[in-house]
Image 1 (cartoon, helix red, strand yellow):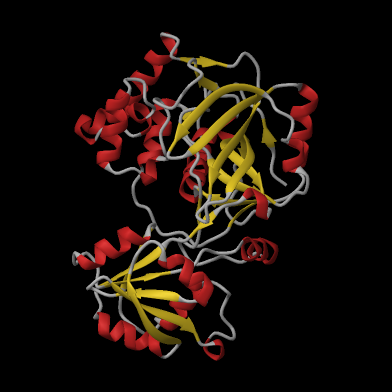
Image 2 (tube, rainbow, N blue to C red):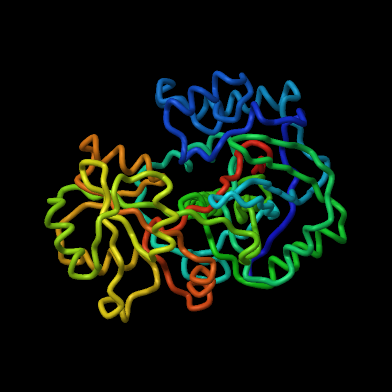
Length: 394
């Protein structure tokens, strides 16, 4: 089972971090990055999302900014190793008030297939070395991987508050970060997470980059004390109350939409869905249906024919892969009903298909059976903020 250890974190000296924290780098557009950079001179995007305009030196520029923040006290390092409890309070898609808790620490980096840390879905290839180059330059883990612990009892261990060291309010979510450095409590958290496998929920690419970086560090004589053997990870318990899962919808290109729908009709019952609006997700849930998005912004309900998917996982993504296996097409992924509709109606894709969120039960079954979901099956929400906890590697 994987090691899970505390570390001496870098943290913003300011308590209210709403102006300096940011969403994960991989959900930010260039416009998002610029807005955040303009919001505050110490916003984490100045380091975590280097400007393309800085050219090949952009990663060293990012490191220079980071070191300046440390030197001037913008960022302060904990005097001793700690875990960080990370709580989020929010309303989910159904309007229900929710609260989730997890813990940020350093999770062991294991070889692919070695066990202990498991993927939960097939990943799409990413050729860019951006995260690796940034790690090399800054010698930090700037944003956490998101893991799900299969151990029982982690949530209970996190009930007692720690020392509140930062709060972020953004997009209707309150993020609260609490430091825990009591040796007995640290040991208890470490033992529970280390007692069972951890499933990577979000950040497969970041974890893979950590593996590459670890191998580089092993090959040279460094003074990092083996810190590259672990990577910063948020761990939550894999239980219903601790997860809020949205869908990632499908966009299809390099195909004829009429032929695409014709192929789907062999596997799904179809009926008109009317204009595609965000509220259609409620109807999808009630009907047990997907929605095909047409070029005019209307939709077609796709109700799975049970006899056509007898040997297919209970996942809309798996159903679509099965139904379109013999149809030439390219698929991409997009979160948000309105975005999918707008892309299709503007000609950015031939068609789209809205899918339903994966259930926590199916995520658990995937972990228990050692299976992999199709790419981009899950979108865990709310997203953790980058900035409140930074892990130095030096």
